[in-house]
Amino acid sequence: MTTVVSALPPDRSRARIVLGTLAAVAALASLTVIWWARMSLWPRTVYVSELGSPALPTADAFNSALLLLAVGGLLGGLSGRGLRSPLRVLGAWTVTASLVTAGLMFAFASRVTCTPGCPVPFTPFSTLQDLLHTAAAVIGFAAASWAMLQVAWADPLRGIRLYSRTTAVVVAVVATTGGMFSILRFRTDIGGMLELIATSFAVLWLAVFAASRAARRDGVTSPVLNASTLTVPVVADSGSGRTC
Image (cartoon, rainbow, N blue to C red):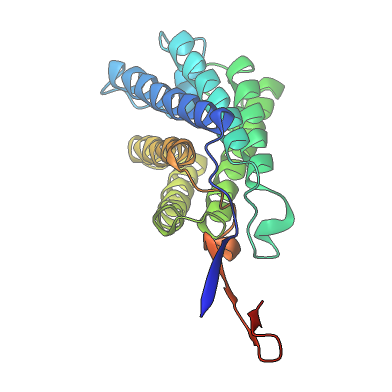
């Protein structure tokens, strides 16, 4: 005979629901504006960061979208408080730390834009402003990608873990290919589209992750503690006739 004891009480934190919902809305709104900005210049070849260049009519809209993404990252990170990967490398810091870092970097990049043409740093016509913008964008994207990997082994929901792993692979392959095209200045039309696709997958992941945080009702914060109950054996005391 056994008795069941709840290991983790139901968690319907109002703060988590609000943070997750707002983060998902901000991320989706950001993605919508980014695509609108890109399509408004079609068929011109541009990279994502170039949409925020002051030389283009999309600058204000894109930089506002980047700021929205920063807000989404910050709120999404806060909604994921308590998530830490059980793997030693990925668990060096929390998912929250990664997403907050990404949010801060995107906020910086939205205020310090690249110059017209968005030249690659350390190439002719590039400036310190281009270097700062590119560094912030790269760090932010890397932090968000790291958060995907952390969630891939930390989230209690199997579906979110699988989705995070798949997205991380897609983003890594697509972004790396697009980045190489950019550096080599080879087929920039394809490179620019690949960068946009990688960005879209990453932003959509943030929206899905944040929405899942807002929707869940359990108090589980780690896959190691994924069971909502613990089974405690009941042992009969033959001398007293009692159970314990």
